[in-house]
Length: 199
Ligand SMILES: [Zn+2]
Image 1 (cartoon, rainbow, N blue to C red):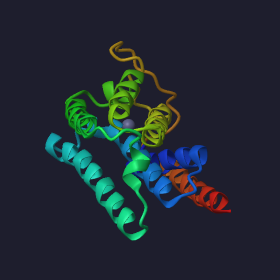
Image 2 (cartoon, protein in one colour):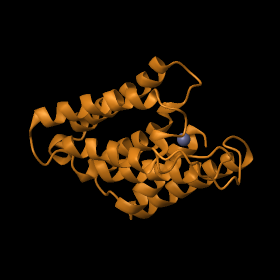
Image 3 (tube, rainbow, N blue to C red):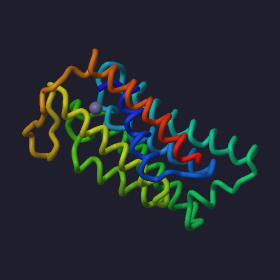
Image 4 (cartoon, rainbow, N blue to C red):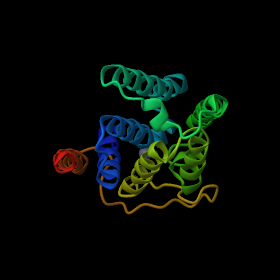
């Protein structure tokens, strides 16, 4: 599926499950879910590896900037909500290892390692080293939703990587009418979810 559809679905499942009621919780959920929903496609070869790697770094920087912005204007201690322990070395090590693994993921074949159960758990485990579950859970759910919805397409996934057998339901194209319909549906449901959460 297209990136916009993955982002919409990843945010939908995360928001519906976690139902964050605070501004900081909402920002953390959306930031983590967005990262988890786009990370598997770091293996796309439609642009240079450097550009793909830049996307991950840009995502990190965006989340940090948004966090600083929210922290400043809403006067909430977002950092303590992210971290249950204040070990800055764990935090930095996590980001460095995560970035290196993202770069290595961009070197793999499309829909192989990063679209596998192994990839899902490795990236989530690395993230859990520096962040608590308010970050890891939406990341995990969005990442999993990416893998599951990609199974609808014609091009198979090596779900049980390193086993090379590919799986797919071959129900629709990753671009086109179904993709656009799903994006619209997920976006509508996100709106409904946010309205429900706010009451
Ligand atoms: Zn994908």
